[in-house]
Length: 615
Image (cartoon, rainbow, N blue to C red; front, top):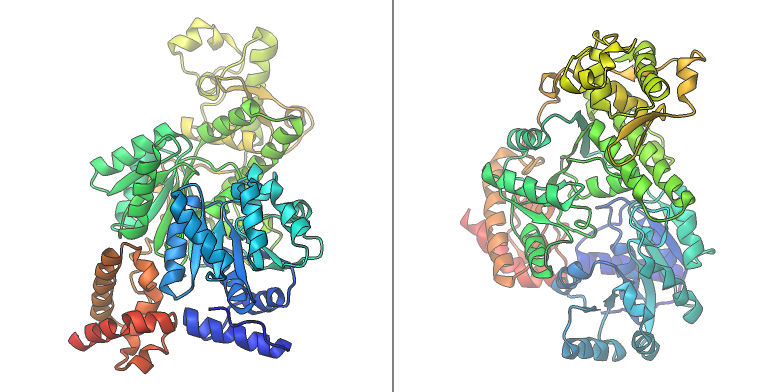
């Protein structure tokens, strides 16, 4: 497939444009793609930050097809390599992979193809580069470039650090003249610097696209029977849609998947505790079926190319903004409306603080984790636009989006100084007068003046703070505690989540520091809800074209099932929508549709024209 390297910058750019049109079926590059492709074809190193769905893969696939040799892609996504290779083969690109899932004869076949120059792209898991046999193999073939996908995995500041990535600096040492391109969807400036340093990419050109995903609506609600909240959210806004639900623990994953199934929602669990066959089967179903929901730990999702995921839900607080952005970015890759929905409560703050205290590593590592969590809590508690807060974390500015929950239904703020003083005073008195420590629930009971057995057993009804907080409800007090924890005015310690004061607590108790708080709604269901977005099946189609679109989807589903591949490998929804709107009557007209390259036109053109002729 490789066209070889032609002389002159304009000719090389022209070759890239030809590959883009002929192979991928697109008439023009998007955003920074053209500049990145040109830079790598010229032999330059690059660090590419581009949001999920932004077209990162083209940035190394096209240079690999233009430059002589084979593009070697380092990817941690072993479970998805087969689908990635299938998608490229369907385009007429000669791709293969080497990983631990293959039989020896399969590996030998791919190795022989590489050495003979019969591949355009070779996918490798990072741990294979530690094997001497792999290094010898790469020396026997001609390498066009090295692409390091999911490059944030190299940084301990990133949200998904993988030790195997630390050895990738050897690529530059062994092949100093072969261009390298490191790509990721999420990285703060500190993470970017770490990637550059660890991979030896000091001379690399940085390409940083906007982190904004305007088609995603960000919403965070108070946690109140989260499984029921999730069920209502799915039923009212995303019935029959594909989605991902993230939970913190394996047990929560299993329970949530079972709960959804019992209530008529098609859902499967995914976590590291399941055997490999079950995980692979559930991932395959998600990629190949319409409307399936995967309930998962963060072990699921990286590299998932399914374009029509309509929502990502979190039932537990993510550990970092980077992780949250990466996970929510799996929704709406096709550019159609999608939702990032999360429920969040006091228990999440307590749990995450506890996990940090129990984590391996030194004090510096725990401080890093704490910084990540603080930024995530600030995003949850903001009274400003969620999108601007998210972008600000990645050093990007922008006006309020008008589409997140805080824009559509602005929260009230109130002067919570007195309430904060009451809560901090209760913690202080229990510690100093009784030498005792308790969790949030018991301290709220004391402030609310509840004479329950536990309060009476410890004589806490005799404390001067007993009953001084009757002006707020239990829900409101839990909101106060959550926000005090988020702002560092309270801390959690021990296995039982007991509350303790911080150095900053004295500023509120004794130094006159004011404490503005976000007002807690009485019940999440009583909030002025954002209008459900509805089912964005084909948002840019005229009603008369919808039957054509649905008929094309039926044909695509049958074709994909026959080939044993995900439907989007045949054609994306966006391509089918354009076909339905334009209704081409010849192969030449069909070939002008975005996403219909030469190979797909030859393979699927006649069946598509037959479907159109029947309408």
